[in-house]
Amino acid sequence: MILSIADLVIEVKSRYKYTYDLCRDYLYKGDKTVDFITFATNEQLKQEAEKTPQYPLDVIENTCIYRNICNEILKFNGIFIHAAAISVDDEAYLFTANSGTGKTTHMNLWLDKFQQRAFVINGDKPILRKLNGIIKVYGTPWCGKEGMNKNISAPLKAICILERSPTNVINKENNKDALMFLITQTQRPKDPGLYALMYDNLGMIIENTDIYRLKCNMKKAACEIAYNAMK
Image 1 (cartoon, rainbow, N blue to C red):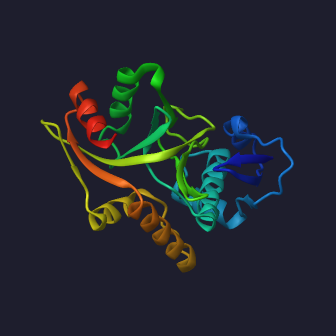
Image 2: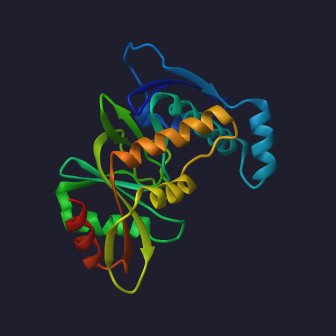
């Protein structure tokens, strides 16, 4: 199957129907040249099955394919970030945090506040890519258990690192601390060349994006203080 993800045309060779069904909304029907081809190797399937024996082979294959896509996208000024991505007034805001902190809860506060002005790009695993001088946020089929995603993109406005707190406070994050956190929220390839690309792509995003740290209680006021600071 041929997919369109992050303005790239990707040929995916899969053994199982699971990946096709997951990626149905991202099927490409144009005539552009394929940017790259990917599939799960036998060795990748074996290693992933040993790490996660509780999952069926079709899910394991899908995990390997997604990992391969994330690695290849590094070569195209792109990177995956573990975050919830929402568009408000056609600009993208990312909320990233350690698992269980409340990315989805905070995103839902924005959806409730902005109604028709807002929509989810991806609830868990968006891709960021610099294209024609603009950093854009893209939906992907891989989006967490809630299944929130669209095959769309929007220019990146800001990134917000979330922390739980009884009170709501937001401040700009310095580049060094932003890098140290974001590097834990993306794929870190074992290949030295790909790791260097990951590091460079993260640096490019940080240098060209306002990044904030929001300590919040996940109530309505948290959304308002975050938006007013980042807009």
